[in-house]
Amino acid sequence: MLPDHINDIPPEVLYTILKVLGIDIGEFMYNLLNDSPQEIMTYTKIYSLYNMREQ
Image 1 (cartoon, rainbow, N blue to C red):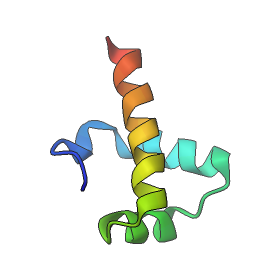
Image 2 (cartoon, rainbow, N blue to C red; image 1 turned 120 degrees about the horizontal axis):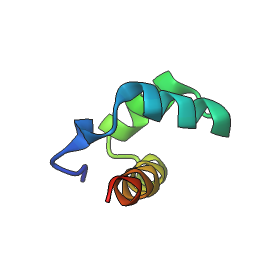
Image 3 (tube, rainbow, N blue to C red; image 1 turned 180 degrees about the vertical axis):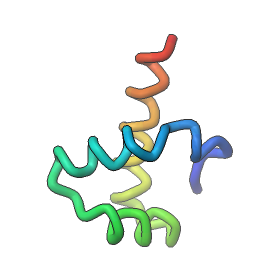
């Protein structure tokens, strides 16, 4: 299940991180929105690191 504040990460930040990791953005977003466990875990890690940076 996705976090309530899925849009807290600016798209350009998320896309840049995915690009650096070599992850296809379209496929990632498709799988994320279809509750794929691997994409949810990846997004959760990015989300938590991004939120730690802001604090």
